[in-house]
Length: 257
Image (cartoon, rainbow, N blue to C red):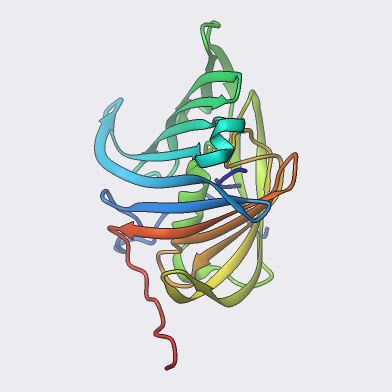
């Protein structure tokens, strides 16, 4: 089983930002809950939240949280409790800091990356090891904040478009490639919804972000709320489907009688 996200996504290199004067596509209070199935069997749950607005080093930031955990019979075989908190600069629309805690069966890892965007530097620390300094690209994202940077594009996504988002993760910087594949109406447990389908090429670790390709369905409006994700993992494949939400605007289409 597995999960986002997050989510990795040339026409241009992207300093993600909402258009001036427009309302952000996500705000504190947005809470998205997903049911995760692995090889067709329900085995986990995920949660994406924008929990609050606070300050970090004198800058206003949103706290973005992702939680992925295995449940039921899968948990008895392979317990997973992955958590990530990203500090997302409200005005700059890029990462200021990310804290990652990976707990998958017997594997444990904690890492912190602090982004000093103005200096194009990042401090990278794993567990109790000393922090290391690395150069980063302008407006770099962590692998989780990249999803929210993509959402900042709003309704501007075009089918056939290829987007590159600068990422720093696991001591390397790279351009996260996202292909905009198609528009598609899909049926979810909550109803029908029109989506734009994107394919990020992942290069990160964690249950919601294995290396390889992932397909993500975003609501086809200015908010680009993620409602479905599919990806192959080491064994089989997983699917995450939105099962409940609050603090988000999603226009579900009534089914015909």
